[in-house]
Each structure stands twice: as C-alpha cells, then as structure tokens.
Length: 395
Image 1 (cartoon, rainbow, N blue to C red):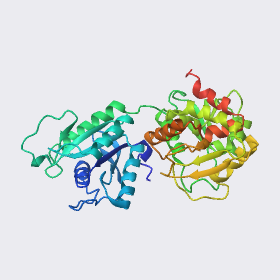
Image 2 (image 1 turned 135 degrees about the horizontal axis):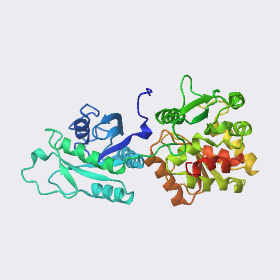
Image 3 (image 1 turned 30 degrees about the vertical axis):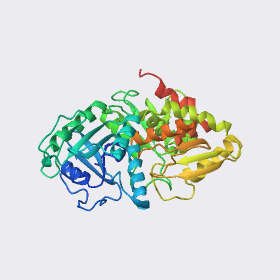
Image 4 (image 1 turned 180 degrees about the horizontal axis):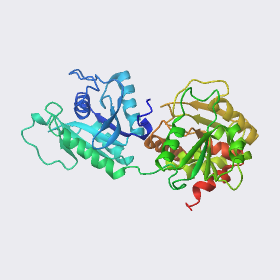
C-alpha cells in the first residue's frame, strides 16, 4: 500500500449481491467506470468476491465488492454462496441487484431478511430496466440499466446519501491533546518491525497529530530516558504494547501513558468490552480453550507475538495451561462454542463492520473478548494507568 492511499479498514465497504446473471458485475463496472469484474452471459462467471479500492464520488474512499451469485449450484457453488454470505461481515452498505419487472426470489428475500437482522443499510437496484416498458413506483430501490447507464448516477447519489448518514467522524486522540502539545510515540524497531515503514496504527496516529498541529516525537524505548532528561512538558506518551513495562518504568507518573492498542480500541468503539474481557485472563484454567485471532496475515517469526509471546505470558499470568487455537486474515470461526476467551489483534486491517461482527459472534456465544494491547496492559498491571488518559476528559 502506498503511503498516500486510504487503508482498506478505513474505507466504506460497498458490496453488490444478487442471483447469477442479474448483472451485478456489469453494474459494478458501470458504477466504478472501469472493468473491475469480468462480464459474461454464462451464469456464475464471478466465482470469488472481487474487491477494488477506489475513490467514488460523492462518497470518497471506498472498497467495492462484487460477489458470486446467491443461487449458485452444486458443491462448489455452495462454497461460493458461503463466501458471498461471509462478505456481509465486513459490508457497510449492500446493493441487491435484482431483475426489473420480476418478483424477488427466495434467495433474494432471504438476503434482505439477513440484512435487516444485521441492521445493514441496503437498497435494491432493479437492473435491465431498459427492457421494461412499464415501471411501477419502487418503495425500496431504483431502476437502473448497466447496459445503457440509466440510473447509475442516481445509484451513486443514493449510496452517497447512505454514507453521509453514517459517516465516521471519530478521531484517535483529538479530544486528548491540544495544538502545540508534545506527544511522544514509542516505536520499537526490532525483528518484528516491518522493514522501511511503520505499522498502520503508528502511521495513522502520527498523521492525526500532525493534522492537530501537535509536536510528535518518535523514539525507541531505550531513547526515552534521555528524552525526559532533556526537560520539556510531555502531554502524552503512546507506546507499542510489547514494551509497555519498559516504557512505564521510565515514564514519570505525572505523564499520561497509554498504548496504540488502547487508543484504537476506543477509536473502533470496543474498549469497554475489551476491558471486561481482560478480567478473564486471571481466571483461566488448564484445558480452557483460548482463540488467538489476527486480522492480517504475515510471515511468522521467532518470537511472534500471537503464536509465541502471548501464550507464554498468559500461562505465566494465569498459572494455567490453556489450549490455544490460532486464526489469521479473513478466517474467524462462526461458531465460538467451547472457547473461554478470544484474544484479537488491534484489527487495523479490518473495517469497523468486521470487528463489530466478530464482537457480535463472541457476545452471542457468551465468550469474553480482549485485544492484544489491553491484555498485555492487564497482565503487566498497567491497565488502570493506561486507561486513565483516555477516560479523563480533556483539560
């Protein structure tokens, strides 16, 4: 990803659903103004969700998703339909592409019921309207024609209205600092750090501080004592969770201290639930099943936090030997029955809808959930201190 690009997790996810040969791919191509998806008269041409990050006016940065048909057949078709339904987990807005002049089929009606159950905003695009002579009023959608372009601009405007009604204006730490404040970002550069770049939460936090006209000072943990010895007022210290203990030991109690993980848990609206989940760590027993899940995929190294460090820290903290399971990327169990706790990464590569879906599945199963940073703060006895800056009102 180029540094100028909006991260996928921060883009509005717009997914197009429908039967095979409903014209989903043609309509996606018409909306985007480019050949995003392969178009064919053969049913089932789209065999996997196709995604494209782009700028779509009047919405802005979006991720367009073209999905396989809801009515795909056979064993392989069933797998494709399942992939289509999995797309709902990270959908912000859904477009059901249906045939103009025809009644909705059972698969289409089932999708609408599922969208309603998930409280997902949606509209119905009645495609191939150029073939219709009579067009009765539509209470739940609009007429479009991917072939002639009719209704495409109206569809984009409707999507823009939906986006404007739910636009996320939240900030990472704008309510915690003021212009001119000095904020220290502690960023360890070790074997786990990506070569030549910062990880996404560090990038986003640094950029927001610059937008807020704050003085952002970046350093590694071993450089922090010299920074404090040089004097000057530090409004806030934000650290990578893995060096929380080391940073806390040299940061004066008078200086507010928190972590990137805690800031982003608050940013995505999940902090309260994760704090409750952290209390479960001490009550784990030998044999309890713990799921450790990451939203991205990366090469596992010696000392990997998810598969090695966290299990060791949990065993030491709980005094027990839980049984650990691991998932990464888009993989996440739909049935969480039998797990005692879920540890999740910060989810910087997942959008809010996907994180909320995972939290919803955990809540439905009655399984506590906590992210890496909150768990580490809890196990190091630093959770109360790290929450203090974000729970205290500005000023």
